[in-house]
Each structure stands twice: as structure tokens, then as C-alpha cells.
Image 1 (cartoon, rainbow, N blue to C red):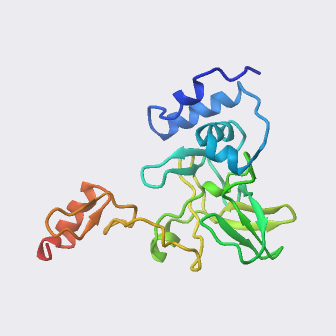
Image 2: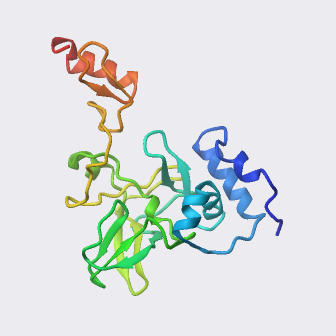
Length: 223
């Protein structure tokens, strides 16, 4: 196997092309480099997150890729069948009273797992996003579920197939703290990037949703 050349990681931060081209670049790199499955502690994550993501993508399983609204997300590197294993959710094991944006409770062991750090590179569950803040939208686009076994927690697809290139989404439940979420698009509930220039109130992710709201929801009546 080759050694990773200087500059390769930085050059892959913004790979040109669509999602399938980006996936294919990483799949090719997996045949060239042999990566150890190391544990990602707090220092490693803070010091070089870009390198950590790159190394994780060279290991088998789904890929961590940039998203337009959520920083990074977890994407299918191949076609996934119904109820197929996706990845494990690793992290720091704690008690019930632990809280945080990456904390998930394991009812089998009665412990929490904080996926913010102390996970293996191959344990990519902490990169699975929710689709939206509102319950109806979260449930509509959820395509994985959390399962439990003797090794801990893992994601698998639900009763639908997930094609190559699609992002994995999970509903973190009604008790999950979403107070840190930014404002959502009035139309699609994804993260909003700008406010209507007229009313200074309605928020949208892009002009397509803004035009849809103007035409179909008759936003002009309240603007």
C-alpha cells in the first residue's frame, strides 16, 4: 500500500463534481491506502478534524461528506438493501445524566454514548443527521434506525432501500435537545440562509422555496 502524500488531504476538502464523483474518488483511494482504525480522542478531533474525516473515509462503510446545510453528513457509498447494517455509533460511555448534541441512550446497557469523541474511525454513526427540526419532516425522510447488540449500538436501514449517494437520516426522538438548531426554511424545513427582504420575517433556504411560498402560499398577502 502507498503512503499518503503531503497535500492530498487538503486537495480533497472540496472535491469537484457531483456526489457520485466524490464517492468514486474515495472508493478508488481505498484500494491504494491501508488505514489503521484508531480511536478519535478530543485532542485529535479539535486539532485536525479534516484529517480525521479523510482517514475515516478510507475505511470501509459509508462516507462523511460536506452538506449544504449541516456541515457534514453520512452518505451511502453503495446501494443499501432493506434492514442492512450501515455503521456503528461509538463514543464515550457514561451514565444516564450525561447530556450533549451527540449523546444517545442505550436501553440495553442503561448507559449513554457520547459520540462527540472517543469513537473509532470506522464508527461513523455520529455523522448521521436529522432531516429537519419538525417531527413530521424528520419522520418522512428517516431511512435508518438505531439497533442494539452485545457490542453496543449501530445503524441499519429501515424497510426501504437506500441508493448510492443518498444521505442517511435518523429521527433522534422527541427528547433530543434541538435548541441549538438554526432557523428553518418556511417551505422545506431545512436550514434557512436568508430572510425575506419585504416582511423581514419569513426565512428560506434558497430562492426556489421563496418563489414557491410566494406563489402557492400567497406570501405576498402577508408581506
